[in-house]
Amino acid sequence: MSKRKLNRRQQWRVEKIQKERASRVSRKDQEIDEKLSAGELGTEQEGQIIAHYGRQVDVEGTTSADHDKQYQGKVHRCYMRANIDALVTGDKVVWRPGPDGDGVVVARLERENALMRPDTRGQLKPVAANIDYIVIVFAPEPYAHANLIDRYIVAAESTGIEPVLLLNKTDLLNADNAPRLLEMAERYQNIGYKVLTASTVDEDGLTVLNQLLDNRVSVFVGQSGVGKSSLVNVLLPGINLRVGELSEQTRKGMHTTTTAMLFHLPDGGDLIDSPGIREFGLWHIDERQVAEGFREFDGLLGGCKFRDCTHRQEPGCALREALEAGKISPERFDSYHRIIASLDEF
Image (cartoon, rainbow, N blue to C red; front, side, top):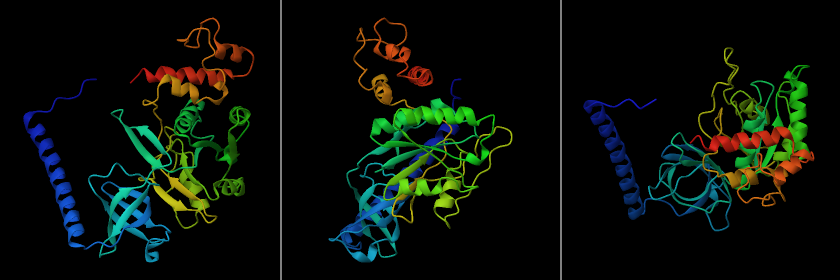
């Protein structure tokens, strides 16, 4: 469907709004520069972004022998200088406190990694940084698609973040859905992934989950409605994120968490709760990276008879030989090809 063409008046209004926004940003940057020049801001401190709100972020002061301890553990709403690259929850930054409990982020420290996803225009956008685990949450409802789980896994593998699978809402397992879900979980365990189970209703598996998250920075991802916010409410009593109910018509989750936020777990770990998404694109990843995101392909890539092997019907295909030998599951192999096919759609 072609985009609706704007008339002259509509185009003028769009341009006017864009100019007004640019003007506000310019004025704020000028105000920040004036405060810096006038010495109105405090000395540089280190901190970590725990929430992001457009041009503003919440920065929590972190421990450093060279910095003022009075800011340690305290949260300040900070503006970002225009010359700083995009910041996300989990980023470690240098900031300067203001006189009114606010502050200004003046630099971003080097990232260990960043979880990326394309926006609607296909441009890469970081959603969280400095992560140890990406916990892929799935549940009996809404319907758990293995291909969506594989997309999360490939995305995690491509950024060097360890994926962990969590089958949530185990209290909803029954004779109809349990065989498929437990078989899926076993399939991932067989290729070396950590797979946990949990239920916030009967508190099944929460102790093991807490032990995994201890002293790590983790992010929960998965379809809306799989219970990410419910898990956070149990793991962090008092946080009380608004928990959305499944739509009775679609059996899909209603989006409830509006911004990625970092929370401290009682045992020392951190948890980033990010907005629920129903589909995770891999438009920024090429075919080679997708293949490298499948652990069971290790040692086989590059072993095909033809260098341009598509791993479909070509003779001497190392992946197909492994498939026939039972070393690669048919479900994962099919999922791989579905992800490859989706790359051509964009």
